[in-house]
Image (tube, rainbow, N blue to C red):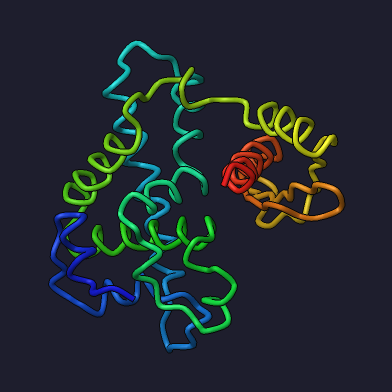
Length: 223
């Protein structure tokens, strides 16, 4: 695992409380009295607000429906995992040996959760303005073009075309489960190819979860 100072340099932020960044990077498998789940919860809300405000200001003439679609393309497991990869966040995670051996450092779900936790920690220590500056810079560095056509790609169609060409079959989407109250459910969907689960993702609708899972599957199959 790399020194945390290198991560701080990448995000241009020095934590005053070192324990806070350690907690943000600690997966529950590491078996400490703390983990990053609470900070992940906070960071999810912070990022939702930051991205929402960013899009509101960037697209003054777009309607609510279009802004929601663009935000949904950025605020999800695949989107946050991509931001995490830009700063090589996986190299800094505290994981159990089992999770390490299970390629935990490159799992989109772990990367996404850790990124949310990191942003939650920055917000907690230095407020919304600082968290906003860091998140927006990462966003713009990661996505040279932010618009509906570029972001809202149909990953399901792309995956189907790829698997038909390489495997001669079409992927199947299976609902793994749904959690939360009726007004705020989160759906988990798996992509199954030739009877094998190749990717999973969660979303606020089955369609969003399918698209995220298809994007993750595409990344894996393309190497």
